[in-house]
Amino acid sequence: MIRFFATSALVIAALTVPLIAQEGESVRSLKARCLSFQIDGSIPELYAHTAIAAENPTDGVPVEVRNYLNHQIDSIPLYGSRVIFTTDPDPASVKDSKKVMAKVKVADDLRSAILMFVPGTGDDGDPPYRVLPVEDSPREFPRGSLKVMNLSPTPIRLMLEKQRYDLKPSATRVIEDPPVGDRNSSAMQAFIFRDEKWQRIGSGLWPHPGKKRVLQIAFFNPSSRNIEIRGIRDIAVRD
Image 1: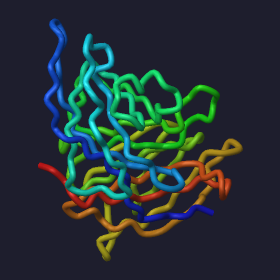
Image 2: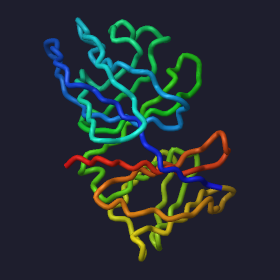
Image 3: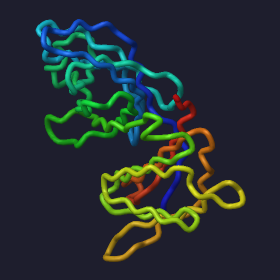
Image 4: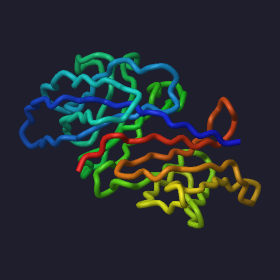
């Protein structure tokens, strides 16, 4: 049986910090909010290190992980595309495996994102968290839309009213202005492809996002041993 949750998301606030580039290097800014997903307890204050290859790397930018998405947007200055999150502002902490909490590589053209923190692989030497960048610019994730992410190991199918949406594992799909019934909600059915057939795992009503946006994330819950979908409402949308 699938369970649906209206949860909030973890937000990273990164202050705009001047960063002096080395000759031949360029600095860009990533507007970031971070979402914690499937993580028990709170994540300690982290520091985002981006001047990793600089001759004189600067201190990490302090970031605070929260459990909701709101208007707090953080600007992380970037060298290149690598970001390492540690528990210490000292740039040397990126070489201390006990202090490194997560690593991520972002696309060169990414300017605005939700950085989703999820549990790490658990493999020896890997950080405790992984980070999945989710483009959240109004062009890629407009008002009134759903962004569906399939983090489960199996294909999923959503039926909203009479419209069908299929997603392979690791796929993301934006559903603009989802179809609704009389109560301005979508009658939803969810299926997974297992044993060579589609099996229904749940149903419910999804209210229309209105002028807001909603992330809908399909994932395998190790506690219930089921594929579940969790809805996360973005209460602050930038134009």
